[in-house]
Structure formats: structure tokens, C-alpha cells
Length: 531
Image (spheres, rainbow, N blue to C red):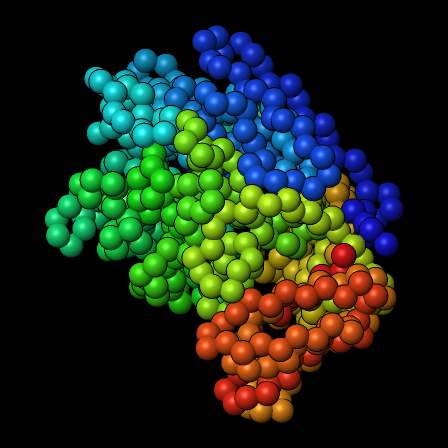
């Protein structure tokens, strides 16, 4: 059955969004309505016309509603969606501050996190300056003093604001593009972009780069930033090679490693693209394992970058939301493509070889949650309010307020997270049952994710029991010569490096199996989902 409230039939309805006050917004261009789309979608998912720029999109999901924020010359506009691809305008949620404030205009790269009972927007801004700087085909550099650009924070009680600026910037040097990250142990980190002598290219050319610093309990930074991505490759330069960019960090964790996908090149041009740098610890050392970008211009979409990663309405399938130019038109438009794990790192969209390019063909809508009781593996997401709860009897401390609880069971062990941090676990079978707290919204999906890397000799197998009778999809990364089976579907793979394989069985499957035909076969990132 399809389920968005399967864990509790009496789950409370999500509160409606309050109206955003219009006072004080005179002179701002209001957001324009996105073009309605039929079931399914094609990129771009947000294009409000030839004069509108939606650069640096970020998506926050809260209580089952997606909130999209993007850069603006005088304010941060927001859109809302229930399916991640059909967006409605929700007003301007933050404007530049008054004359004596550090944050008056060019509000760049807003990212919002819900923590400690409030919504915290990390956003860069500056004071008025003299003259204009070229932004190419993008909007965003329109009279601000670039030397005074700082990373700061604004706060609100609701995701749609209105947000109120902190009095002082968070980072007291040139800085933009903050990305908050919570690790498994609950420690909070902030990745952000700086430009100084340390971030120059090795040949001395001006450049900017990403660093990371720990966020203290009071919200300040520890003051010990370490390098994450600094300019090093030719593709990271602008068209005239007079400046380099490594910016727009977004960090994911997989198999105990940290992967930062960053944007390189000039944001106003066609050469903008996504690269990746990796580390075994948040605090580094970080290293680029490839000199090539992993996602580049293609077809009539150019300059893809400054992305974020969120999940589909099923609560488990990751999507990257990013900006890009369509044809020769002005303004960055918002696009969405599925993110896969392909053995040695993340991959945007399907394709056997990276770099991949933006999708323009019609795609199904991001999937809704499907729960098949015959499948032991599940992923439960629930927004709850209370001090504590239990997941199938496993006690979990919440600490009050509204929290996002995620319970993932792979058929043999249960792991529970609260607001991204791992808080409890146990081995054995489990049921998706919550008790002891007010449940505001839930999503329950039959889902199995084996992120391990398996090395097989000829004849050896990787097997996962499934057992569902409904449609099931799988994605797996395979290197070497092997046979992949799901239900009655069988494919053979022969690849020198990791190749992404996707299969679908309409009539369900008892199991998923990869059998090594050759020696030294590697199998990783097995993902199974009921559809």
C-alpha cells in the first residue's frame, strides 16, 4: 500500500504556513508563478520567465512540505512544493537590513536548518559599493561592496519567516556559501567559502575555496577552519583564467567517508560545473580524487551547479536540486535530477560514465512512499513533538520541541536518528511502530540500503532477501564481470570500473542477487525500493 501516515493512523495534520507580511517589501520584484506541469516533469522545474534569476537554490523539507530559497539582489524569495518539482511562490522571507547594518544587499546562497526550536538561515550579504561587476548571464552582483561581503545568520520561528538578521556577521572576513552539516555523533559543522591568500591557485592567481569549522553550542564558530576544496584544476577557472572558484559546498556521508560536492568555475558562465573532494574525517585532510568534474554542461543546459541534496516524498530517494542556464537565455533556472551512489562516489542522473549532464527528457515525478508489509526492511521518517518516544520498544530521548526522527531497519538491525544524529540502535527484527510522543507527520517506505563494498571471487554472490509482491526497483554499482538478478530480470555487466546498474521488477522479487562471473568483482551501494 502507499503510505504517508502508516505508523500512526491518528497522526496530527501538519500546521498550515502563516502568511508572510508584505510590509517593507516595496520595490522588490515579487516571485512569479511557475509554469504548471503535467504528471511527470522535465527540467527546469522552476522557470519564472526570461528576466528572473533563481541562482543558488536550497531546499528545506519540513513537515512534508518542501521550501525552496534562492539568492536575490535585495531579498530572499521562497517557493513551496509537495512533490519537489511543482513550485508555488511563497513571498519574500528576508530583506536587506537598514543603513547601519552589515547585510544590506546581494543576499547570496541561503541555506536553512531547523535546530533548537528555530529556523536558522545561513546567508551572505554586503553593504552598498561603487559600480557594477559583471555577473555574466546571472543576477547577483549589482552594486554591493565586494570587499565587505560576509557570511551571516538570520532567524525565524517558521520556515517562511519573516527572518531577522543577527547583529554581527558570523565570519569576519570575505565569505559566502555556508552549508551546515550534522554528523552522526551530533556535532555540528559549517562549511563555507573564503577568499584570501591561502585560496589562491598555485600559480598565484586569485581564487576562493571552501573550508570547514565546528559550530559551538552557542552558534559561534570554533575559529579553526581547515581547507576542504581549494583551486587546483584548469576547469575551475573563469573564461579569462584571471580568477578561480571552488565554492558552493554540499557534504554527504557514505561508508564512513565524507564527500563534498563543490562548484567550480565562473557562476555567470557556461563552464560552471560540479566536482568532488573526499575525506575520512570532517576535519580533513580533504583531497580531490579526480581532476575532472562529475557533472557538466550538456545539451541546451549550461553552467549547472550550486546544488543541494534532499529526498523525494518517499523519504529515501535522494535528488540534487541545482541551477543552470537554458540555451542562451538570461538567469539561472532550477533543475532536479536523481542522485545515485556509484561505488566510488556520488553521481547525478543515470549514465555509465562520469561526468554526467543535466536531464532534459521527461522523468517520472519523484516517488511517493510505498510500504509492503511482506518486506522486512523499512525506513520510517516522523516529525514528532515530545520529550521521548519508543521505536518498536527501543527508547529514544528527544528533548522537547519538534524533531525529525528517522528509523532505518535493514532486516537485521535498527538504527534511529534524531535531527540527523544517531541516537539509538539494536540488532534483530523490528516493526515501524512509534509510541510516546505526538506524531505530526510520518512517511514509511519499504527500503533497503547496503552501502558496503563487497569484493567477490568467481561464483561468489551478494544476496539480499526482499519478498515483496509489488513493483521493486534497485540500483547497484558493479565493477568487473557479474550477473545482476532482480525477480525475473537478469543483466550481465562487464566493466573495468564501477558501473551504475538500475533494474525494475513489476511483479516483485523474492531476492536481489549479484553473482561474480570473473575474479575481483566489486559490488557496492545496493539500494532496493518498493514502488
